[in-house]
Length: 342
Ligand code: PEP
Ligand code: MN
Image: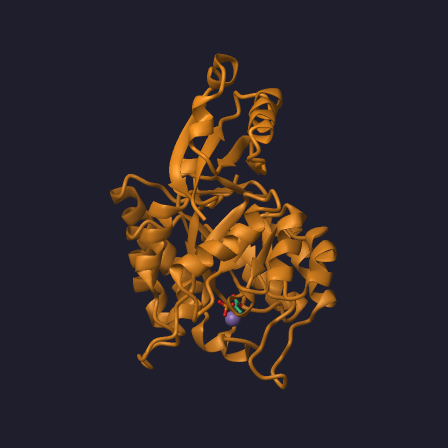
């Protein structure tokens, strides 16, 4: 259904918006109010009703978007873009932010050593799965709750905010009490109960695109988070399944450009899960930043040959340092800079 959207910025008071709601109700066209941060959005089904509003309603600043559906992620609602605060790190402020770490938290030694390496070379966030959604039930499923304390310890040692994947709506509150950001994995992008629970947590979310899902389906999945009042959403391109077996998945940089054009949400690219090989991480990272990505999500492991999960795609410490060194001049050439730990 297409409507006309009345968009009120933060200078418009709730009372002014209520005035519009009453006008529409009394005209027999009740509406529902949506909120994106401090912006209020009112869909109006009959555009002629707008002309009936008195000057006291028209005067407050508002914008009219014609013939558009309510999509909270649409760029026009926040042309300047959304900034996502992950602990002390900001994603979407024009800088290039790198979140790195092991695919899975495996042990105290592995987690702390990897965290120290990624912090040393300029990562501004630490990734690490404690609940792993594995294709085979016989594969390592993560340390689960025991891994959570290790992430907290790594944050304490390095100062890096931590992001971990959540696979069950029942886990959201307990994870959110400890971590700085939640990841929704590709396999769960359309787990709507999970999206709603994560939206309600209010925590920053890395929403990974399902590898069989379209650009617009990803935007629709983000809508579940946004409708819960959580605008701290980062869209993640992590490769889609194609006919090409030479890489684990096919990195779709078109999605990066389209999401940047069509939504106000920051975009992160995962060159590790898409390429599936360490030697692809650097070229895919450079290409992602050139295509407009705000951030990168990179698998790093101090001993990839011993990794319990995805060791064949993780960068060794020196390889990670090399990628970071190549990214800095590219960012500068684009008039951007690498995000630095606050
Ligand atoms: C991950 O980031 O560890 C992961 C499981 O990724 P994806 O959901 O993209 O496969
Ligand atoms: Mn992985």
